[in-house]
Length: 108
Image (cartoon, rainbow, N blue to C red):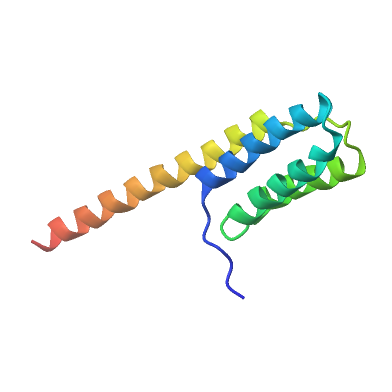
Protein backbone atom coordinates (compact mmCIF):
# COMPACT_ATOMS: atom_id res chain seq x y z
CA UNK A 1 0.00 0.00 0.00
CA UNK A 2 1.37 3.38 -0.98
CA UNK A 3 1.05 6.25 1.47
CA UNK A 4 -0.29 9.59 0.29
CA UNK A 5 2.29 12.30 -0.32
CA UNK A 6 2.81 14.82 2.46
CA UNK A 7 0.77 18.01 2.24
CA UNK A 8 1.51 20.41 5.08
CA UNK A 9 -1.12 22.85 3.81
CA UNK A 10 -3.63 20.01 4.20
CA UNK A 11 -2.31 19.28 7.70
CA UNK A 12 -2.93 22.90 8.70
CA UNK A 13 -6.38 22.84 7.07
CA UNK A 14 -7.42 19.70 9.00
CA UNK A 15 -6.05 21.06 12.28
CA UNK A 16 -7.91 24.34 11.79
CA UNK A 17 -11.12 22.47 11.01
CA UNK A 18 -10.65 20.27 14.09
CA UNK A 19 -10.29 23.41 16.19
CA UNK A 20 -13.51 24.90 14.84
CA UNK A 21 -15.40 21.63 15.28
CA UNK A 22 -14.06 21.32 18.83
CA UNK A 23 -15.51 24.74 19.62
CA UNK A 24 -18.84 23.66 18.13
CA UNK A 25 -18.72 20.49 20.23
CA UNK A 26 -18.35 22.36 23.52
CA UNK A 27 -21.05 24.89 22.61
CA UNK A 28 -23.86 22.40 22.24
CA UNK A 29 -23.05 19.78 19.64
CA UNK A 30 -21.47 16.91 21.60
CA UNK A 31 -21.66 14.53 18.63
CA UNK A 32 -19.13 16.78 16.85
CA UNK A 33 -16.51 14.91 18.91
CA UNK A 34 -16.37 12.41 16.06
CA UNK A 35 -15.78 15.12 13.47
CA UNK A 36 -12.87 16.44 15.57
CA UNK A 37 -11.40 12.94 15.78
CA UNK A 38 -11.80 12.47 12.03
CA UNK A 39 -10.09 15.77 11.21
CA UNK A 40 -7.18 14.96 13.53
CA UNK A 41 -6.82 11.54 11.90
CA UNK A 42 -6.76 13.22 8.47
CA UNK A 43 -4.05 15.63 9.67
CA UNK A 44 -1.97 12.63 10.77
CA UNK A 45 -2.44 10.88 7.44
CA UNK A 46 -1.35 13.97 5.50
CA UNK A 47 2.10 14.05 7.12
CA UNK A 48 2.97 10.50 8.16
CA UNK A 49 5.11 9.79 5.07
CA UNK A 50 7.65 12.59 5.56
CA UNK A 51 7.09 13.58 9.18
CA UNK A 52 6.22 10.44 11.15
CA UNK A 53 7.21 12.03 14.47
CA UNK A 54 4.87 14.97 13.87
CA UNK A 55 2.10 12.61 12.75
CA UNK A 56 2.61 10.65 15.96
CA UNK A 57 2.36 13.83 18.03
CA UNK A 58 -1.01 14.60 16.42
CA UNK A 59 -2.05 10.97 17.01
CA UNK A 60 -1.16 11.20 20.69
CA UNK A 61 -3.33 14.32 21.06
CA UNK A 62 -6.15 12.57 19.17
CA UNK A 63 -5.96 9.55 21.47
CA UNK A 64 -5.92 11.83 24.52
CA UNK A 65 -9.03 13.59 23.19
CA UNK A 66 -10.76 10.27 22.50
CA UNK A 67 -10.21 9.29 26.14
CA UNK A 68 -11.14 12.69 27.59
CA UNK A 69 -12.98 15.14 25.36
CA UNK A 70 -12.57 17.88 27.99
CA UNK A 71 -8.81 17.99 27.40
CA UNK A 72 -7.33 21.09 25.82
CA UNK A 73 -5.59 20.50 22.51
CA UNK A 74 -2.84 22.87 21.29
CA UNK A 75 -4.30 23.46 17.82
CA UNK A 76 -2.53 26.76 17.29
CA UNK A 77 0.87 25.35 18.28
CA UNK A 78 0.38 22.34 16.01
CA UNK A 79 -0.43 24.68 13.10
CA UNK A 80 2.69 26.73 13.92
CA UNK A 81 4.76 23.53 14.06
CA UNK A 82 3.45 22.45 10.63
CA UNK A 83 4.29 25.90 9.26
CA UNK A 84 7.83 25.67 10.64
CA UNK A 85 8.27 22.27 9.00
CA UNK A 86 7.03 23.72 5.71
CA UNK A 87 9.33 26.77 5.99
CA UNK A 88 12.31 24.49 6.70
CA UNK A 89 11.48 22.43 3.60
CA UNK A 90 11.33 25.57 1.47
CA UNK A 91 14.66 26.82 2.84
CA UNK A 92 16.26 23.44 2.10
CA UNK A 93 14.85 23.47 -1.44
CA UNK A 94 16.35 26.93 -2.04
CA UNK A 95 19.75 25.71 -0.79
CA UNK A 96 19.63 22.64 -3.03
CA UNK A 97 18.67 24.72 -6.06
CA UNK A 98 21.52 27.17 -5.40
CA UNK A 99 24.01 24.31 -5.03
CA UNK A 100 22.75 22.77 -8.27
CA UNK A 101 23.13 26.08 -10.11
CA UNK A 102 26.63 26.49 -8.71
CA UNK A 103 27.60 23.00 -9.95
CA UNK A 104 26.20 23.76 -13.39
CA UNK A 105 28.04 27.07 -13.55
CA UNK A 106 31.27 25.36 -12.47
CA UNK A 107 30.94 22.96 -15.42
CA UNK A 108 30.86 25.88 -17.87
